[in-house]
Length: 409
Length: 91
Image 1 (cartoon, each protein chain N blue to C red):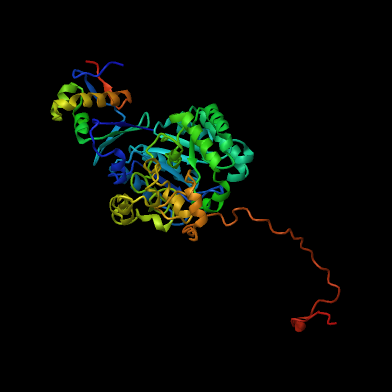
Image 2: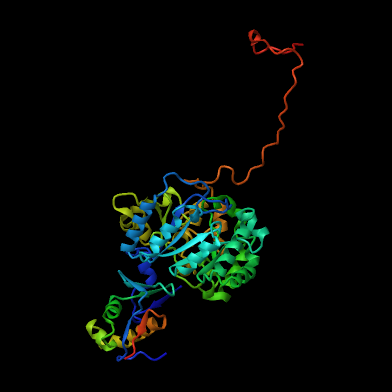
C-alpha cells in the first residue's frame, strides 16, 4: 500500500521514472534464509528442499541486518525454504526488529506453536504470511503436499487465538484455485487475516509445473475483475500489473521493480534481481564480498543495466505498454522468451503466440535444492527376502569357483 | 479533521522513518505499514523543518518555499497528516 504526495502538478518526471532509474536502497527486500523445507511444493520459486551447507551463519545474518539498518531498508520479507526451520530464526527476527527493520515472513506453519504465536503477536514489527494454495485440502495439497492444508489452518488458528492482527493469507493464483477466490477471502476473514494474492511464476520448480498450473485467459479476466472489485483490501505484491491491459491499472506501482526497487538475498548470500529470478543470469553479486550488500545494490553491473532505460521492444507499439510495461522479466526468461518482448501471459495473447513461435530452449535452472525424493517418485517394489534352505551340503571353500553349486544341463 | 493552515503545528509521527532519495524522500510508517513518497527535495525540506515549536508558515519559510508553491505544499502536508505520517500538535 502506498500513497503519493505530489509537490505540485508541474511537468516533473513521474515517480515511476525515478523508480526505473533505481533508489539509494531497495524499498523492500526479500531474504530467503534457508533452502531447507519440510514441504516440496510443485511450484516452489526457489526449488527448495535441502539446506545448502554454505548457508549464512547467525553472525553473518546479523551483519546483513546491521547493513540494512544503515541503508534504511524499512522491512524485509523473509522466506525460504521454510525460514522457521533454522534454529536461529527467532534470534534473527528479534535482531532485525530491534534494529529498526520490520519483518514480514512467510511460513507454511510447521513451527507455529501456541507459545510462538503468543511471542509473535506481541512483536509489533512482525507480520506473518501463511501460505495456502487451495481453499480446500484437496486443491491445496495437490500443490503443496499431503497435510499442508491442515498445517496452514492450524497455524492460522493458533495465531488468531494469540491475538495476532498482522496476519496474511498468501495465495499463489493457479488454474486450480482461481475459482476459490471467495472461499480464500472467507478463510482470511475468519482468522482476521488479510488476503494476499500473487502470480504463479515459472521459476524454480515452477518452471516444470507452470504450463499446467497457469490460469487460463478466461481465469485471468475473472481474477482481474475480482481484484478490481476488492481494491486495496486485498494485497497483491504488485504481482498482476500485466493484467492492466484488460482495462484500468490495478492498485500498486505497476512496474517491474527488479534491481530497481526490490531484490533478493538468497541463503548463501547471493543477491539476485528479484525473488522470481534465482538464476545465474540475474545474479548481481554476493554479500560476502568486500563491499557487502550495499556495493552490490549500488554498483553491480547487472543492476546498473536493469536501471538503464528499457526499449520496450516488440511491446512498444502496444496501446497498453504504459501500464503493463511488458510484464514480468522472470516469466519471460524462464519460458525462453526475449526480455524485451511480451509476457508469456500477455492478456492480448501475444505471449502465447510468441511461445508457439519460439524455438529457443528454456533455460536450465542454475540452482536446485529439491529433496532428492521429490516430487514423490513411485515407491520401489516391495521385496520379501527369504532364505533358501540348502538342499545339499554347503559349498566347500575349495570349490569357490563362480560356477560352484550350479547344475549344468 | 481540521484544515491545515499556515498556523498549524505538526511534527513527524514517532514511528515514521524518512529516507532521502534522488527524487525527494521515502517515508515509512512502522505502525500503519504504509509508504509515502515525497516527490520533491523542497517538500522534504519542509517536512524536516516542521516541529513542535514551529508553525507550518515557519517551516515553509525555513525551507525557502516561494509563495506561489505554498498552497500546494499545504495540500501535501494535509495528505501526510491524513495518512498519519505527520501528527498535529495542539497549539
